[in-house]
Length: 177
Image (cartoon, rainbow, N blue to C red):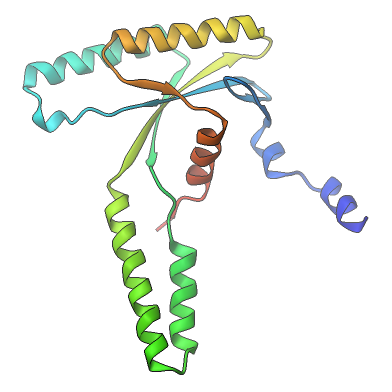
């Protein structure tokens, strides 16, 4: 009973961020619906200068067609900072040298995994739909975005609820180091 009263007193993180709910297309916020798309990056190091210019022009076409579109680049995986701090604390406290050695190997493994994943990025396109748009209009916007981006030779996939939750977790739990 006490916890419910405490919860009602303060704002939840979802409220502070302005998120009202998940929708079939993305997130409903206080300022409208956000549509999230994962766009597969192109390895431009293997492209000729002319092909890079074409890719840039295609991206410019997409961005000019949807002025409310934003690009977000994040790590594609969570960071291990809390786990690493825990292992470091356990190593310092552990009296058994064999267990300290095992913990040190675990810490080394996490360091290596984090280094390998640090270069893995994900690129998202986010489209803001104005507040008051009907579901049919949002559906049409989703189709228009998907079609135009695909026509510009980019691989695109709209994020489903589990993907979106994972993205938000990564985005808001990112390491500040």
